[in-house]
Image (cartoon, rainbow, N blue to C red; front, side):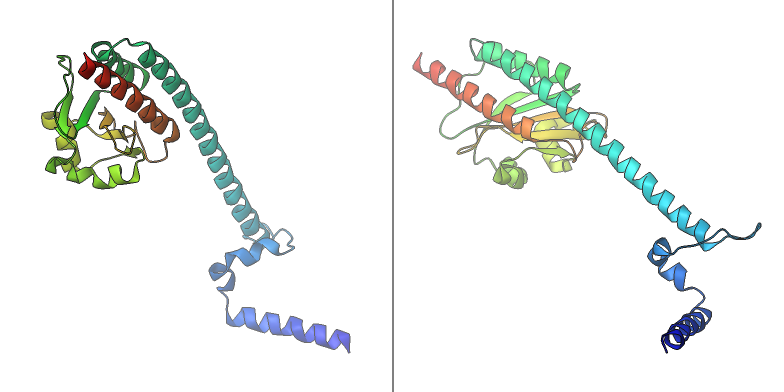
Length: 235
């Protein structure tokens, strides 16, 4: 009785596969669980097809592993660069010393081509040291900043590409040269500025980069800027 049911099932499978010769093409996952033997010379067996699919999956896993390792290495390097930069910024005695250090170190540590710093004020402008760097002040409700509403609203750094309107606010005539950017709000509640680290290389800053360390840099910079502003006004 049991043999008849088993034979019937086998016959059903054979009939079905003959009626649907492309079954394994449409359902390749079914191949992986089959127990197969090699085919005669000159033919491609299901076993060979199975091995090919498994090898493809192994290759994909290797690529994913290498990608994770590379990302981890980049994040470790980023942590070290941010740590070094923060120490140098905290050693700056005043705003006149802090701003040049910020720009020069960002260009060196992050291999950046352009740096843009926009400092926000709510009532009146602060006294900033004269500099040839791309550092300016703007009112926190300036219409030009509307293009950064999402960035400032999330209060998190973004890496990759910005819109032409955003690049125009940050880099003016040099906007066409800028291909990739790490853009971070400086602190929050309220945000006291916007810092952009830019490269002419479109792959230098990308969306998969870790942003935790950049957020930390923004918090440190916020506290240093507020301290120096306060000192300047007291004087």
